[in-house]
Image (cartoon, rainbow, N blue to C red):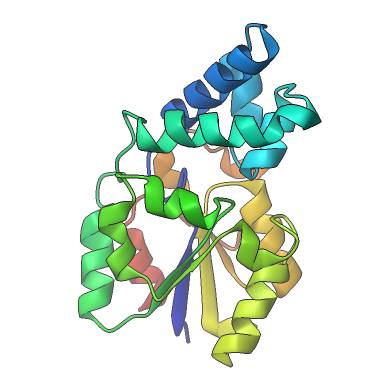
Length: 209
């Protein structure tokens, strides 16, 4: 029986891909003086911010400044991010039904707080587990294993819902079932191992009973 549902954020709860990719490319352009194609930024979408900046060519000595710029462009000033259709209604329904939920993300804790598109969703979650909670970030299972210990839950009592291979690998490493958020329209189900495929947020009800 699923006793706790854990959601990824970007690409799962929030349709934030384009705004985050554009912010990353803009940050890299300012720090490197080179144009960064959105396709390169998109490759880093599931990575935590420091790794994403390195992926697009930001030098190690510029990472701290890059974090400040990326935070401003993607979260504080970000436009275009919003919950996927049906997500807010799903979270409201799960909360009303007494289903505990948490978030497991490659974001930092500051990025939860600074994002106006995520802020209205915070009230639904028991825990907001970011990159600093996890020890090693996704795709390592560290954060999920810590969560299981702290909540005294078995792996089979938790479901992780995410959109990326990093989510899938984290779940597999912790022995947690993984549901692929196929509703974001960008994920190729054949490329991301999953236990369950959800075509819409509403399908989660059928899965958990």
